[in-house]
Picture 1 (cartoon, one colour):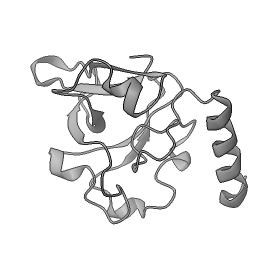
Picture 2 (cartoon, helix red, strand yellow; picture 1 turned 90 degrees about the horizontal axis):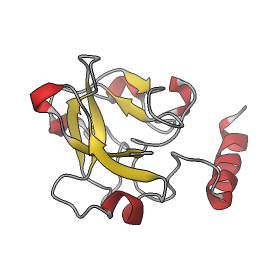
Picture 3 (spheres, rainbow, N blue to C red; picture 1 turned 120 degrees about the vertical axis):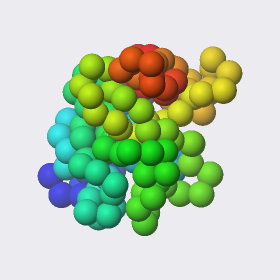
Picture 4 (cartoon, rainbow, N blue to C red; picture 1 turned 180 degrees about the vertical axis):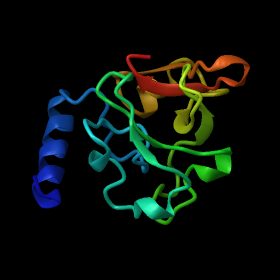
Length: 140
């Protein structure tokens, strides 16, 4: 499916509410739903991101993210995040040992993910031991 055809389809799914991980107008590709890596960061040069792009299949509906070493690595590439996009953090993902970018809900009210991103999102821990972070994910 071409990009030109995929964009209207994704927009339609968001309107219908049937795309669990989709967010419309959040200003960032991180956290968008995906089936494969090519669904993620479509308007960003993947080589400019701090690390390899991933489509997490262990998150309901998939979750676009990329590898990182620090919080500064998230939103560092041109076009990765718009002004006013939700804060992102770099944290471990469960027991994978990988550090990945996530939409943050640290220090936010419990309803932040639902109110600001999608009714399908909740705030949960990334897992990964003592360095875990609080992040917005579908079904969280």
